[in-house]
Length: 446
Image (cartoon, rainbow, N blue to C red):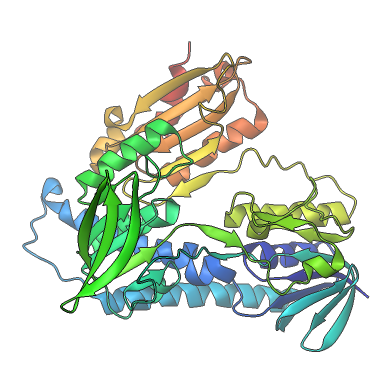
């Protein structure tokens, strides 16, 4: 009998398999498609590869400010695609090398749970003491007239483009929609972003998303909030997205419609009903140790529907393995940082002001435009916003600006250790650095 069978080799699955093997467990990892899951093959990594291509192009547009004169440059989309694909292949190879080195048994196939101690894969029954479901998520479908037309795609399709579009309509201004809009805006694409809610990036801090919308529009992205896609049509060999905006129907010419209306837990073929695992459309129900309603069967990552982030899935798995081994792993899942890779970057950790309504909290903001390093980089847009509770402990931070994806981790460490902000004021930051904005924001609290 094996110690652990993990179904799904995305970030949560393969990281957990590696960690469990390092802890001495006998592990089987099952994947029916590609090791690395959506994040590595069709999500986080290829998106960020494209993002940094786009950032380089954006920086080229600013060269005149630095005294470099370039009359024109050519974007080679074939090189962009090749670079993206090579990064993905390299990362997959690294994972496979580690799995092989540690002697984790990797099985390619579709798994079904027979009972709390049995998994069926490729007509073979595997007996195991514990099972982890790490099957991830899939994109949500949006039903509308014309959704079968050739120009309509999802977030997986856009990362496998053979030809880059010149006009794009993005439906859904969540993280995926905003990232793709920002990236393709730099690839000489005319982007229209359509969001049903009254503001883009709905879950984020209200000041952050308001500032983001203004900066995206300044970059040339057309944004329609309180709006909805009605249908996609073809007239005289030209495609149009028909959008309801402010009580009017508008036609937006396009050669690509990206539907990015969110993701849903992947619950198919696992046999949940038959073995009595409780779940809903939003995900599998688990306790604080990510154990399902069936003992010894756990669920981690996107399939639980809780904060669909790759790094969250990884630490879910670490928590499970520690529980299996009877050890305590003190991970605070209230302090999970998240990042939006747009221009500029956005990062958040902890609570926002809505969460703190009715409490005696304090807030402070510090603008990047006053930071010397930001001025040297010519990246002065944005701010750091911090929230402190009545005990003088930092409980939330929201950043929009240069290197937000890096800065957020200093704040996350602060929050995890519950450092009093008056104590933190004594910590020295090197000058001139972007990280000084964190220290300066903290100093603003009285």
